[in-house]
Image 1 (cartoon, helix red, strand yellow):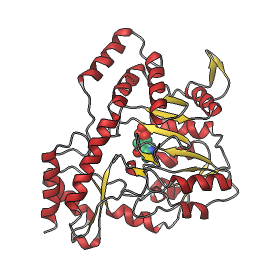
Image 2 (cartoon, rainbow, N blue to C red):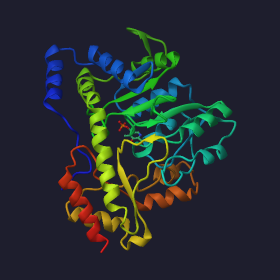
Image 3 (tube, rainbow, N blue to C red):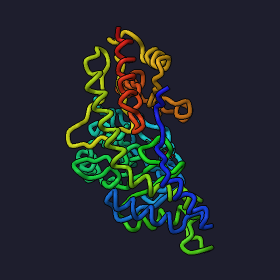
Image 4 (cartoon, protein in one colour):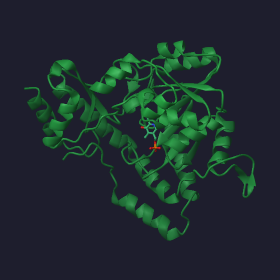
Length: 363
Ligand SMILES: *Cc1c(COP(=O)(O)O)cnc(C)c1O
């Protein structure tokens, strides 16, 4: 089976981890600092604060931005649940704006319709590794005095107008094993704002300004030096591994775009899309349903995934909270999307297998 995701871990990484283990300094020490410095330099922000995972990065980013009870944060319904859940963690209310075709990213025009006096921030998600329409979103933030928090958990190294995702507002990254770079579990907050950086650092470590002096309620969201050592190695190879994703994606698009009923992903103007996922849409005219295609590709040895089968506003938990929005674009997309393997370990032979398998299904 060609897996839908597979991390690349080399000998240098294994040695780096062994060295941390031998050093006896296992958590939030010199390696975490080195990783933060390197990551901030790569993204192009003054500060980077490492955390336990992407979810905790989002959580402390929102808290450091001052989001709390009574506030509304506008986000996309087409993401992993963490994007909206972190808003609830703060006692605030996620408000969903439908997405645009063909990028499937949050629609700036629909964000405008959802602004109320309670709106405090916009939380766009750079879905599948393609940056959102940042020019429009930044304009909305400026016009309505809103904070920008970017969920860049799928967009390590992605760019909009030559500037990296996660450097426009407060950036949040995940280093889960399926992402473009990994630390096993891990996350990062990026920002140019010194006060936000300071607050995020404090929140990450039980609100301590110095040892055993607690200035606020905080959490244990510390990253280990073991994970940071992996992250430093992964960051060093990120551009190379993103290039592989990009060339794999280009090959797939060229090879499948003639198949009726299959819509390959598109790259909007001014974007560097880093293809965290290569996600096609299986439309009605293909002849088989998306779920049938997934099943049959699996039988031919091609691993696939659905990102995401159910929009966040339609999740049982959100229904219980009273959400009953009708968001037609996302609801249709959720029934059509199918992600194909695109990661750096997909070989040219694997690409041929994927293209041939899809071609056979189309008759
Ligand atoms: C992976 C992911 C997260 C959560 O990151 P974790 O490290 O799993 O906590 C949040 N948002 C998006 C869009 C993601 O893809």
